[in-house]
Amino acid sequence: MFARLFAPTLEVQAHCDLPCGVYDPAQARIEAESIKGIIGKLADNDDPDFRTRAVIIKEERSELVKHHLWVLWTDYFKPPHFEKYPQLHQLFNEATKLAGATGTKGTMDAKAADDLLAKIDEIAEIFWETKKA
Image (cartoon, rainbow, N blue to C red; front, side):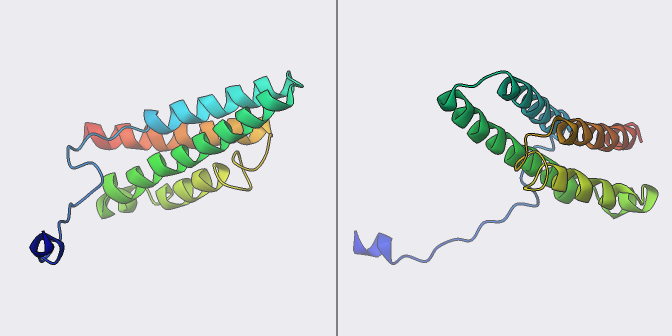
């Protein structure tokens, strides 16, 4: 038993979060649509328990948007993509900020959700262009 506790560990590395190569900005978009829907439901409901649960879920979804965008940004897109689409870094930066504390995670502003969806759509358009190439 002690031998297993003190046995050398093997460090394993993968080249990305999804070694299967399956990437799709739709994951971020679905979460962003959920955020927009939650913001709408919050405006129509005065129940404090419902509102608390909705805010927690909205914040979780905002984190998921950031996660899905970061995976695309860091694992899917490569230097040739950034050369061909020089606005790509800025789009990801703006989109992740829109999902963050000053955006959908920290506000109930429906416009922030709409702006986030628009940024995700811009990223998706570039993503699908790269898949055609």
